[in-house]
Image (cartoon, rainbow, N blue to C red; front, top):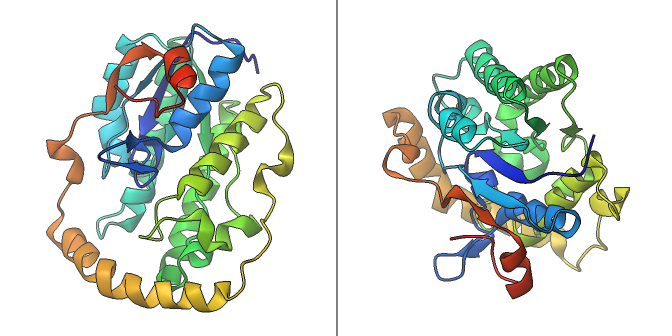
Length: 266
C-alpha cells in the first residue's frame, strides 16, 4: 500500500470520533486524529476530515457520511463501524455487513485507498458484557471477509492480550483511553506500512500492582453508572447521531495541528 496521500477522510462512530480521548475543553482526539498526525510526517501537506459521529450505525455511515466523504474526493479513507449495530436489540448482521461493504466499495470506486479494522474482544475489555461476544466474533468474521474480498488493509484488534488491560479503556470501559487510541493509531500505521511503524504497538505494558482488583471495582461501577442508561437507550431505540454534526466536516491541514501539538480538530 502506498504511503503517499493528500486527502484523508475518516468515517465511523464514537471510536473514530475520539470519544474520551480528550474532553470538551481541549477537544477530543482519538486514533484517527493520531493517525492523521503520523501520516502528516510523511505527507506534510496532508488534508484531513473526520466525519465520524458518536452513536451512528453502519446504515448512517453509508447513507450520510459516505456522500459527504465522496464530495471531499479522498485518496485515503478509514471505515470503522458496526459496534453500535451489534449492541442494539434490532441488530441485523446481514444488513450491517452490506452497509459496511457498500461503503468501502463506493470509496474504492472513487479512487480512495481504504483501511478498516476488526473489533476488540468485548468479553476481554468488559467481562460483564461477555454475552455479546458471539455477535462480536461473528461481526469480525464478516469484516475480515469484506477486507479480503476487496484487498483492504485490516487492523486486527481481536485476540490481542492488550485488550484485557484496563488501561487501554476509558472510564466507560467501551471507548479507548488516550493510551488505547494511541496504540490503535500505531497499529493502523503499521498495517499501512508507514515509515517507523513496528509491531510493538500491541505489546502488553507491565502490569500495575492491584490491577485485577481495580478492574473488578471498575466493573461494579460500570454496571451501576452505565448499564441502566445504556439499556434504556437500546430499548427506546434512541439514535445519538441524529442531533450531532461531525467535529471536522471539511478537509483541513494536519501540519499545523502537529506543529502546535494539539488535537487535530477545528
